[in-house]
Image (tube, rainbow, N blue to C red; front, side):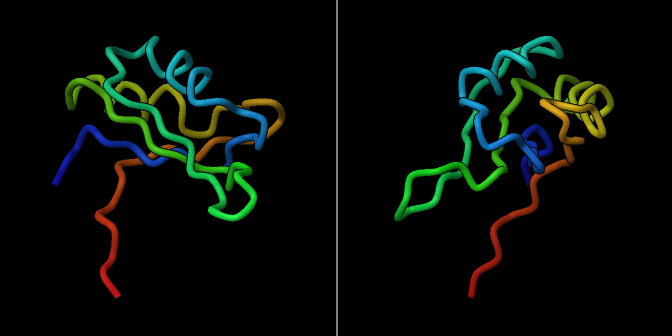
Amino acid sequence: MQENKLYVGNLPYSTTQDQLSEVFSQFGEVIEAVIITDRNTGRSKGFGFVTMANNEAAQAAIAGMNGQEMEGRALVVNVARPKKED
């Protein structure tokens, strides 16, 4: 399981992938930042994933960002769980 891939929930709908990457880069190198969008409308679903370079950076990001406010919304940040197969 990837300990350095983080789930980021309760994002403001206006957040861009660049903004997400920038916010998390203060904790270490960001490999990838992805905001999940609705397939039909292209609008943000209010959550995304950030992959950090290593586990230490990921843990620092969880400690530093979980519960922090972004545009009035308290973020939920934790280690991403593998996608469940139906």
